[in-house]
Image (cartoon, rainbow, N blue to C red; front, side, top):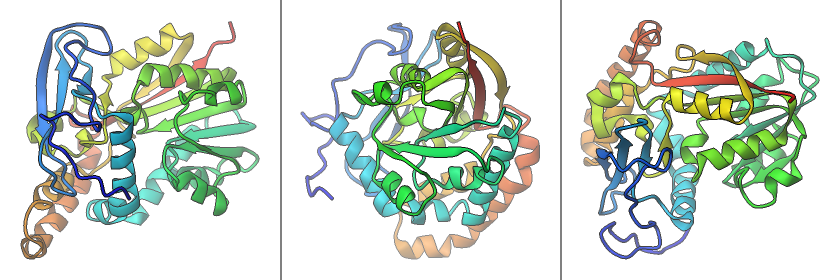
Length: 325
């Protein structure tokens, strides 16, 4: 890992681009700061800012991380802290059950020949999906080295490193896939519009695109503020409201088949908020507070069947078909 010291955001820093004065989605200059959050893992100085557009409700990091900064924080989080951090709020068993439930829901799709899982990480979703799609070839794409490990462990057949919008990637994968899934990937993409266009380039006519993202309209986002776990600072660059994503997919020539705000809800809002708050305290205090974290996780899971049907649902999923025209 790079030993380059972190520089506070109010100085000249290659980890951040210049602050922008308009919305990257609709161009409006009517912006409002929604949250200021520090790095919860390494306690570096400075804060990362999320602005919300008053006109289209797009929420975005401003100033945005540069390519170098994004690569650094991805590496820092996924290679050093992911297992420890997520284990505090979601067990491995819960993650596996979630992947399996998602694959079961998608088994209503026509049997695909080839499937690309974008943002696949270690390839755990393709591994779960093979139970329901035994004759499908699964590939994976991810900006981190985890995708190559997934290939070595035979969870996927081909590994692609980077983003779909990485120069040359979409052209190389043109019309190769019947299904493309993006689970909590667009939030990390520097340009979500370009990533969607590239996904449709790699998708065959009549193929299906499945996108799941955190919902910035979630009531927990208002209630918990900077402690809302899906804000995901400093790694999350964009949070798209459902209306914006639906409209973009339709503009790109897709028919939106499903918008689901129930099944994608992840029961970790209270436990996640407490975990973020405790990340800044002495390890002894974290140990003392461990029973509170367990209680918060129990409350999250107990309330989940109710909350997933209310504005407290923290994510949504869209299934769209690429039109043949």
